[in-house]
Amino acid sequence: MDIKKLRHQLNPFAQCTKYHLSLWQCPSFLFPLTGLVTILAMVSTYLIAARYTQPEIVALIVIAVTAVLVIIGYLVIQGFEQLAQANQMKTEFVSIASHQLRTPLTGIKWMVDLIMQQQTKSFTKDQLETLGSIRENNQRMINLVNDLLDLSRLEQGRFIFKPEAIHLDKLLKEILKEYTSLAKASNTKISLELEANIPPVIKDKRGLGLVLHNLIDNAIRYTKEQGRVKIKLSSKGNLVRCEVKDNGVGIPAEDQKKIFQKFFRSQNALKYQTEGTGLGLFIAKSIIKASKGKMEFWSKEGQGSTFWFEIPVK
Amino acid sequence: MKTILFIEDEPTLQKAVGRFLEKEGYNVKTALDGESGLDMVKKIKPNLILLDLILPKKDGFEVLAELKQDPKTANIPVIVLTNLEGSDDVEKALSLGATTYLVKANYNLDEVVQRIKEILK
Image (cartoon, rainbow over all chains, first blue to last red; front, side, top):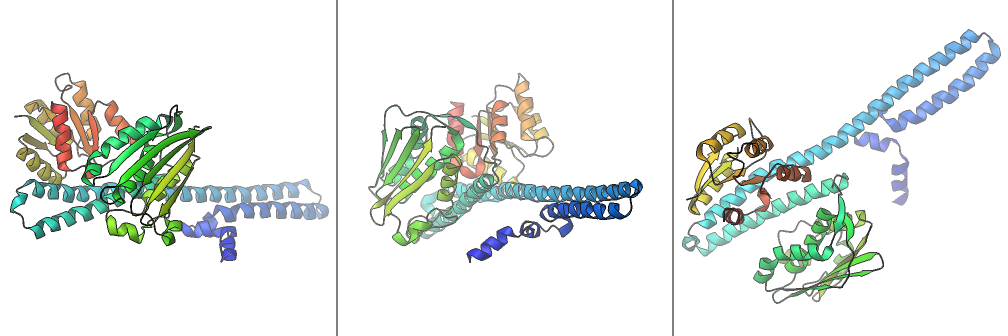
């Protein structure tokens, strides 16, 4: 299995076939070719010059070789342009697709809002349940579109990492305000424990905000009634550490090694929350890694989970 | 009764927002593109404008810029209501004078009304 992977990586044509470039547009083929042509030219020049001593012949050979190298160089540039174009189209496609998808998704969302605004007392229990289900599934699609957009930006390096000095304690307090109604609805108690003198970190605010949203969201959603979520912020040396602990459903042992994978959702989670996309933790961990930090967790099924991350101040 | 102008080219969204806001007690006017939006503002002088960014004839950014440059319309609060989410778009809209920037797909209509009420207080 590993030898196959190694061969695939050493194969210079893999990248080109992936993007449907022909051999003559493939830079990884053309560069070695250039080298080969140069070597051959030098050897043949020597052999020919040894026989024919007229300078004109040597000059002609040099001109011919230069012409060939220029042509190859041109093909190389063309190849790179094609690769760049293919990459650009990938980015644009995701951007356009997600924007286009959001329009009808918003349409459904707001039409359901409109129905619910009317006399819901005149609806039967079944009708209300059906409407609720439409809302849930629609929200699931919206969440997926949002996550795919974030994911594509992250992978393209277009997450626009704008470093600024962030006070994590202030950011946490702001974000927690958004969760007061959700916490109340599920009877979850959230506590924030802040160590004194936590230094500001110079990172991307939106990125860290997303990470915190993901962790807090998970903690609240996967905690049953009367749950407790404890958030702790501390620092040691030039690292700032944030812990989000819940006493919720926990992650089953066999799912734990896959929890950060793209689109992975534990069987446990599927029972409690149908709108998740399986991308939240993958995105959160990617952002922390890109901020030169690390993210890990501890979890026991039935007892709860503690997710934490540590990031350097710079 | 306060008047709200909704500049949006998608008919479904126009209908949904229009009916919802009317039930909440607002007088709602709509425009389908940037140019007629600007004309309507000058004609009816709404108390608040909901502005989409992708519009035919004149896009939301141009409309916003013109609204804020004209002293007669500069004081009308504008909520940008769009599905675009690039941080450059957000920055541009806010720097042009938008009061707030909401991504449509992430807000329920009652949440939008909540924002409107906060701004009109």
